[in-house]
Structures are given as C-alpha cells and as structure tokens.
Length: 458
Image 1 (cartoon, rainbow, N blue to C red):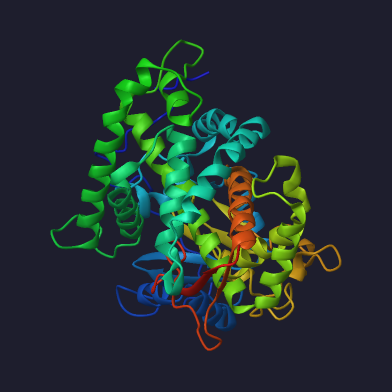
Image 2 (cartoon, rainbow, N blue to C red; image 1 turned 180 degrees about the vertical axis):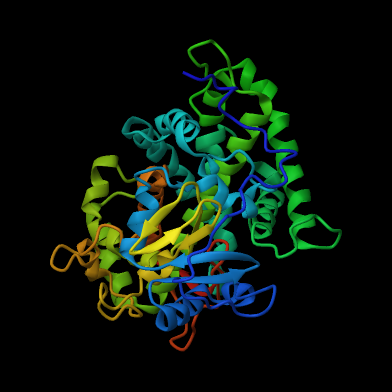
C-alpha cells in the first residue's frame, strides 16, 4: 500500500502532463468553428444550444475546438463508455488539468487509478450513513437560524442568500467552525476561483480572470493554513480534523499542503453544487405554484421543522423536484477526459493523448429519453413513469463510474432539509413572464442572482 504522502502529487512545475496524440481518426466528423477559438465562446454562452447544434449536424461524435481540440461524444452510450472506464482507457486528471490545475490542484476529481481509489476511500468515510445522520442533526438548527436572516418582500436575491447559508453549514459540518465575518470574502473567493477554471487566458496576467482566481485561491489557502495548527493539536468529529489526524499503514500523515488542497475543493464542492441545485428548485417552484403547494402540503403533514433521517424517504416528491431541477440544470454541463490508451467507440478510434468530452446537459434533453424535455415535470421521476430508467447513463448529474460524486447523498439530505423548512414557513414566486438568465459554465448559477417575491406564511 502506498503511503498518504506518496499518493498525492504536487503539480507545481508541470507544464503539460498529457502526451500529444500520434494519430487522428479522420472518420470522426470535423466541425471546428472559428480559427483558434473554435466554439469556445458559444460553449461559454450556452453549452446546451451548442451541443444540440453539433449533435444535429454530426451525430453522437464530433471533433471540434474549444481552444483545445476535443472529441465530443453524445448520448447515454457515450456516457457509459467514458464514465465506466472499464479498461482504464480514460484519464480524469488529463481531462480536468487544463481547467483546474491552477485553482484546484490535487483534488480527488483529478486523480486516476490507485491514487484516486486511495484518496476516495479515505474521504468516503465522511459520507456514510452514521455521518449523514449526524450532519442532518447539525443542519436543522442552522437552517432555522439562517432562514430567519433571509429578507422578505419583492426582489429578494435568492442566490447569494442560499450560498451564504450553505457555506455556513458546510463550515460547521466539514470544518467544525463558524465562518463569521469572513463569510462574504470566502464566498467571493470561491466564486472567483470557480469562474477562473473557465478563463480563456490561462496565465495569471494582471487584470485577467485567471489572475483574480489565483489571488482568490491564495486567500483561501491562507485561511485554511491558519487553522491547521489548531486542528492538529485537538481532535473533533469534523472532516478537517479527520484529515489532520489521518494516518496510513506506515504512520504517515497528510502534509499541510495536501490538507489545504483537499479542504478547498471539498468546501467548494459541498456548497457550490448544492447552492446551484437549491437555486434552480426555487426558480422552478416559484414558476409552478401548484408544485410548490404540493410539496408544502407534504412538509406540513410531517408536523416538525427538524427532519429526522428516517423521514427523508417520506419526501419522495421533494426528491422528484430535485432530480428534475438537476436534469434541466445539471451543475456540471460537461465532463472532460483524456484518452490514456488507444480505444474504440462505435467504430471510431480514439488515440492516447486526445481529449474527449461528454455532455450531461444534452443527454438530459434528448427527446428519445425524456418526454417534453423543456417542460418542468417532476412526475417523470415518479414510479408511474420513471423515465430516468430507460438507460442507466441518461441521468448523470453526479457523474458515474469510479468518479461518481462522493457527496451526492449528502447533497440530497441538505436539499431536502432546506426545502422542508422553507416550504413550511415561506411562500415565493417569480413573475409569469420571467425566465432566469443562466450562466451554465463552469457551475450553473443565475446571472441576476434570482430575484423573487419571498413572504413569510407562519
């Protein structure tokens, strides 16, 4: 067994870890877009519209350009081939390197093989049922306190309010601390760091998005480094403390840098994606008052604000709505990989060193799998229809295979607990003619912070 220290790489100093492909399969259709940029700007503007256009013109595989040349593969069969990765023919590290190595180095999503398995096994302990039960018990009072601070009235901006609350909860659960007055700065730094992952200019040239992202990353590092001495000196049930005291079979511990890298990515993933899901649910239920009333009736029937873990299963219609929001607005609209060894998909050769990408958002809108895919219709996930079961890889908001999101069950608990209390005490709406202006990459969020009419009902 490799040690904790040996299995985490320091990426600093690597200029390019992906080998150059030696061959290209010319049978793959080419649709390259503009010189140099290709379809980069189209992707940043609307990845669903771009994917639909490329899919209509070229079928389920196409070679194109988004700054880098990439082979896009569409549909459940492509998702299964890439995500199951049965022969280790794809590298998550090579796929995500371009986007993440400057702002989220050493994260578990960028790891492959034994390295990924070793880190994932350690982190999985934080998301087992006993821990989820404890997290829910700690969430409930935090949600109640947080909701009392929400403003009421017209044009209440829901995205920043939800984001602050999920960050506060994430800090309590994973860090064992209150964020306090630093919450606004931390939220800002997480937002800028995530946005920098999609910066067109990749070097931190002064004045660019990447430069702002690198500075924000440095502030996050300073914040977490400042807590390590205390965490190493004491033990507590939070994940930060567990990282500081974890030992491998040889008695070796994570270095400070490894801990900081893991904690920054964990905190981003734990609250950014949940914020995205809650925001899309609030928007959808603000448009569809019948569904909002239907869920409210279910929450009222339980009779208590603080959900117990065994009650989560009773909120099945809440889960349908969550899944429908994730179908229509998956937090990650695309997932990149590098080809680690030559392989073949439906008669097309993929060569080592090439980049490939799959598109969860396109798959979630394919009419052959989803009835009226542009309509908000949570009952499609109910037992009477179960549209998501036509193909195991047609609904992939949390990825799939070895890199399935570790926190998906935690996210479900958090979303249900939050929605339950909101529905019991508040009603919200958006104008009938309002359509949310979405930024779909790198993580789905509203460009206008989602203004709603938010009213207390009890």
